[in-house]
Length: 449
Image 1 (cartoon, helix red, strand yellow):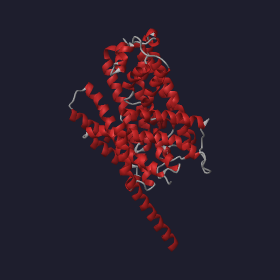
Image 2 (cartoon, one colour; image 1 turned 90 degrees about the horizontal axis):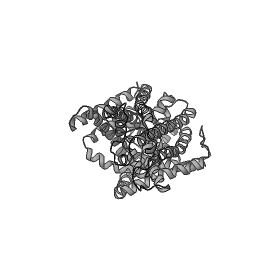
Image 3 (spheres, one colour; image 1 turned 45 degrees about the vertical axis):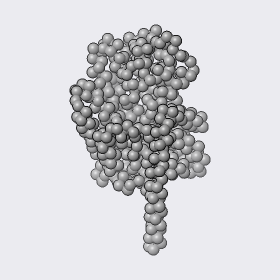
Image 4 (tube, one colour; image 1 turned 120 degrees about the vertical axis):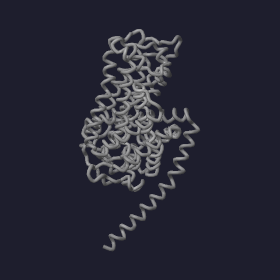
């Protein structure tokens, strides 16, 4: 596939894109959920450690696929090149209409909610400020992929600092008895509760494959992609395990399980920042979530750009700005749809049910490596070690999310899966028919000449 976008991103912005996208609002509440599933403080810490280690095989597989197909598009490209063109289209189709724009809307609103904690405002004001942030980041990333990458690196570094500060200060006040013993009398502890806790961490680690959507704009992908993907998971593991250790060491377990703001309660329990814990966590939340928003604005439109270049999406999405060299139309369209969804929050909530369909693309991606490895022209610049074992672990860990989502919302999952197929297949066949006609015209013009 011809790629009209230039390779301008180095290692630092590539790592920042993955870390910045992964480290979002989820960690502010997920510790309580993991604690409830794990049954003890120690198992909560172990769950985040093992949950992170499980992500390493996924990143190894993604690194290999990204160097085999060093172009924009992420999962869509990997699934398409496995010969599953129709499935690739359906995942991309669902991503644009159900996930990508709604994610922008939700993340921007979440960030402004933290601002509203510091500066109270009404619901309409929150929505307008959320819109302003989307437009701001859209303009930054449209004007320059290189400048946008530097901005992402800076804001990601800034967003890590509050967590490092919380860990650094909190370590001096950790109580060993809180970490080593369950805080709830007769709390269930065992292998099954540990596995439940590991499963509950999966959402917190989702997002590290973001950089694969921009492989076509990354310098020296042979070296950069493996380094970025492995570095990202190591950074996230260190942050999550450090945070969990501090939180479980300063907050009683029964209090932690029922907490809606575990990081805020941990901050309140640390004398050095206790008096300003609410403000500290609010500022941290603003930085963390807005950095995630920036990364999302940057990488998500590359999927529709790749589809458009393949003739499987609206042609305008394949346009590249003559001056700035970015897929400006794809960015603008996705951001404009997100703005509409901000003012239709009930629809945004409904779109969340499409998560089940979209999670399947990760499973398909990891499964596709068995097909790729058999292709005679498959020539990745970097290969994952023990790839079969890595692929099996990746598929299994991805299926955990699919199954858990289906159990949580079985009927919505089935309904939305049907909607994606019913709306997507006619469009797919229409575009494929149009592509064939254009190919015939090109052949005829060549023969005439």
